[in-house]
Length: 221
Image (cartoon, rainbow, N blue to C red; front, side):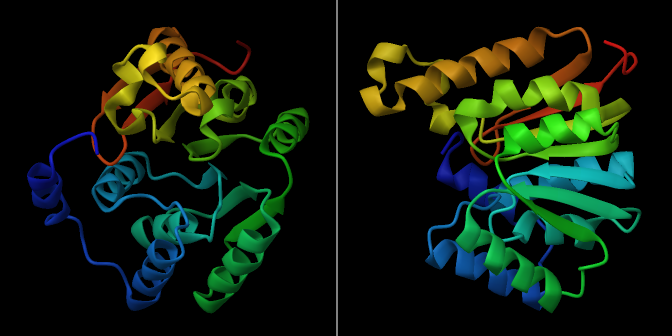
């Protein structure tokens, strides 16, 4: 928890209610310990979508399809979402959820390693108005190398889970050894994107921390 429970609860009170189907998917995720976007972070996702009105969306980290379905529910300008996931069991559940919600024409789930798929998409010349990055945290910086080529000028990149429950600001020696690699790499990612000239970025301390970035310049960088 990056902010206090009381403040988090206050923010959550202003998050719009989910549809019945999405609420059931959210409950399933919590009950089965599937990482899905936190309630207070949903408001940031909603804000980012509503100020950008994207048509083409890329999501890195499908899980059980909750965020993709939420984005469709929030924003009616979305024409298609390409979402990436490598866990076979989660893909099965995600596709079932997408079908139940009647979004198979809008959401396409790609199975495989995100780094490989992102490089393939870049080679194919795909371009997106909005990118939601919510996958393996230790790989964020590697993913970003391809995302830089995929996101259109003026497009938005929203990165989730960047503050590591507040531990990201601590010394690496205060983090358990098994979490040290993620800790180091997340700090590298934050440092890179906050200082990169091609993005204008802000850190938002809700959920487990998010970075909202606007892509500047052109796609030749």
